[in-house]
Image 1 (cartoon, rainbow, N blue to C red):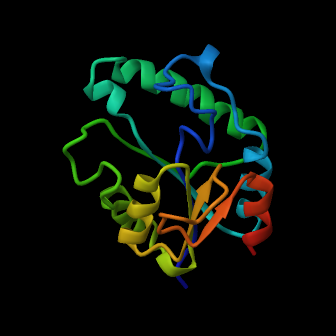
Image 2: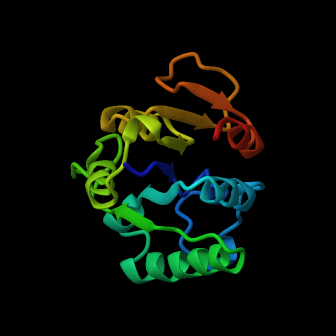
Image 3: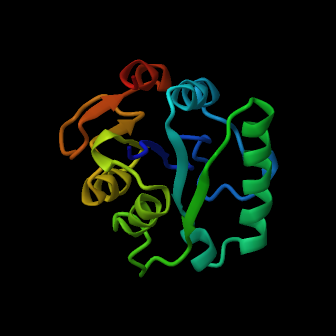
Length: 168
């Protein structure tokens, strides 16, 4: 039997998007993210983070800065008994791995033998939604908005608690 995944964007879904967050002191977790991930994990979902990090390509911060913040983030998840199966990231804006392209989703699909139709993806930008749709993810959720107008998302939510109710 294939696995199912909860794909998460980082900036705007896991942490509050303060524009190019690359320092621990600016990394603020979105309310409900730990509960959501615990819920999905308890239901057998792989938890996979897929994030664009174009700030590296633009010279705003370094790979080391990103890795330091990522280690902090992953440690905070582990403290709450949430295992992140994989953190995929792309710094290059002209790459098939950079959302809206589905490259990183496809890598995860094959590495974890994922049933994409049974999987969920949560993002706060249309590029996140496009990447999930292009990768064949069954439910693509746009977080932090109030309207489905102009989006390919299956669902639009204002809180991660709403997402938790969708994942069964």
